[in-house]
Length: 231
Image (cartoon, rainbow, N blue to C red; front, side):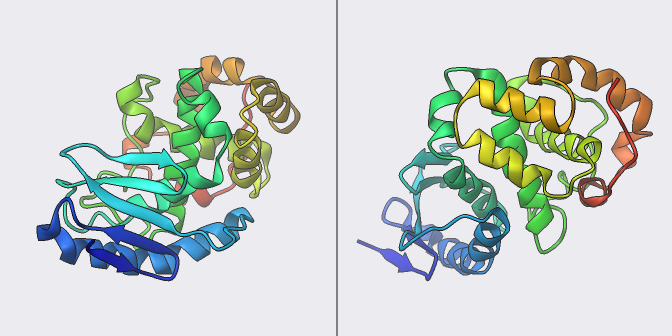
């Protein structure tokens, strides 16, 4: 079986050997970023490795048990996906419990994952194949197809409101529980409101506090501590 072995990740290329070069580069990237991510999140991997393999076209994502399916048609230079999918590993078992059972929480699970993708990327744009992760989008939407744009922005805004730079890590710790009541209690304690209230109020807060979002650099927004509150 064609297997590329790294220190922190592996890649089985048997389903698409013509993309072995990309797989090798992704393993090298993962070996640099995965330990940084796990240290940032205070996550002990033990002896485990992130195990990647090629799926079919557009078949992409974390499957559980340290396994990550990479779409065989993923664009070249899309490195940051390793960071994103590795975050989901740190969200177990909660991500397996709530992600489909209560879809509204997808915004938080994907939001934290892409928040760290941008934060830890080498180019501060998510190490994506294009520049679509460079700036905030013009509109905020809770639609499933928009959670990768809206989710990390929402997480960053909650971080600003909490006035605590460690907020995303603490949020991730609570997402790991898979307990909606625990997540609500955490948000109420740190930000002052339950999750549903925050979701309902954010569009207006965004319109009030974020000027010209399409021009706002994501990395700067994710790392700045803004004196904002949700009312």
